[in-house]
Image 1: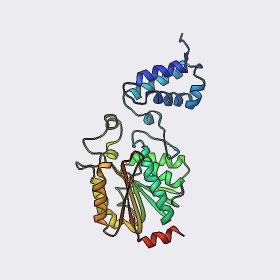
Image 2: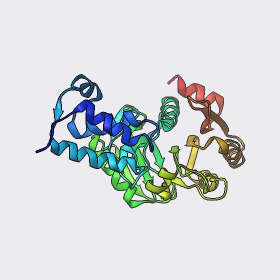
Image 3: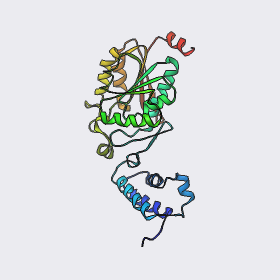
Image 4: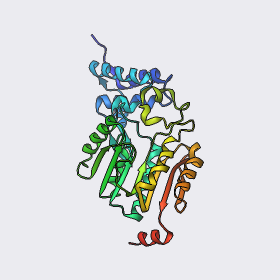
Amino acid sequence: MSVPTTIRTTLSEATTALQSTSSSARLDAELLLGHVTGWSRAQLLAHATDTISPDMVAQYHTLVERRSRGESVAYVTNHREFYGHDFYVDARVLVPRPETELLVDCAIAAARILNPPVIVDVGSGSGCIGVALALAGAAPTIIGTDVSADALAVSDINRDRHGLNAQMHLMHADLCTACVPVSFIVSNPPYVMDDDGNADVRLYEPHLALFGGDPDGAAVYRRFAQLLPHHLRSPGYFACEIDPRQAVIVCALLQTAFPAGRVVLHHDLAGHARVVELWLASSRELTERSHR
């Protein structure tokens, strides 16, 4: 006969088990138990002396074991919050990162000035960027493209989850090659250098969405510099996420491709270069549009 186990004891044991592989062992333990019980972290703490069923304990131990092997909490639970919204994620897509929220911030601010009818999200992945832009009212139509059919399947799940089937369209395409010229493109492309990256990330996350190619990880940005003159209209806007070490390279690529364009570099909350913007419009045009 199984001995009843309290929430406090269960969490304590899981935290100990995760300490060797996670820098946030207690938080991970709480998130995983919350997933099993359907309770929030606050509820777990408020009911710390309550017991949980042996079946739940067994299910929980399975999840803790997966996390202890390096699999992210997001993959274990199939949930990740991004820009205040809940997203389904699995091993077919990258786990959305907090740093990417800066890209969404920049795009929303630019959309308020340019009022684009369409925004193209290149490398849709989980769809988190496109969904966040759609829910913020950045444009009437969002198009998400991805070279991976598996990733688009996850985008489709999240598009449906947030009720955006009519507003958000998905295309199986390499970068923006299948799109007619548009005035607004955003992207969080693969940019990890070949010899870089956390071991657990390398083990569990899709390499196609991680590694940028070329020793400096900037192969995709070089392709953008070649493609954008044919796919980005003026007045127009392009923004992409970068590794901080690629800031000089990416800014130079875009400025060379668009000598008359304005390239702007933004830093994240940690002070790292994170987003590069390209504006194709005169100061007068931008001022006029911002007052409409």
